[in-house]
Figure 1 (tube, rainbow, N blue to C red):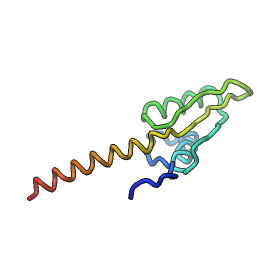
Figure 2 (cartoon, rainbow, N blue to C red):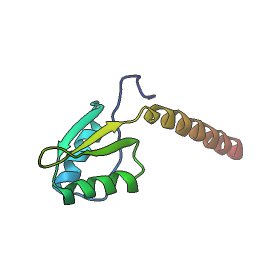
Figure 3 (cartoon, rainbow, N blue to C red):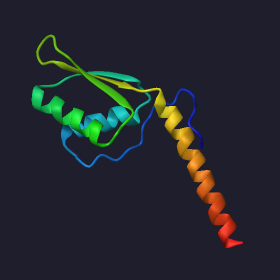
Figure 4 (cartoon, rainbow, N blue to C red):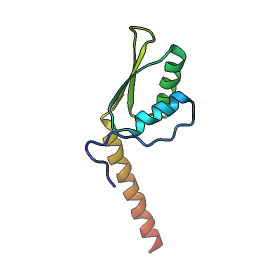
Length: 102
């Protein structure tokens, strides 16, 4: 089914299964748009790396105040645009497959 206008969930398998990636996966799968997550430097760098390497539609910025610093995660609006484009590609491929099998 097509994504509903208020469905901010992201279904994306993460290669890492550490506790922080489990927490990140929980946030991604949720309908929540934002997470302010206090993590020490190594853990923040890991989260930044996972988000970047998977090209997830999530902005991530470190807020440098307090201790530990906070990584601020925000799901991007282009999440919806990406799905629309993906569905167009799927329809095209499906149409080509149907044409080949006739």
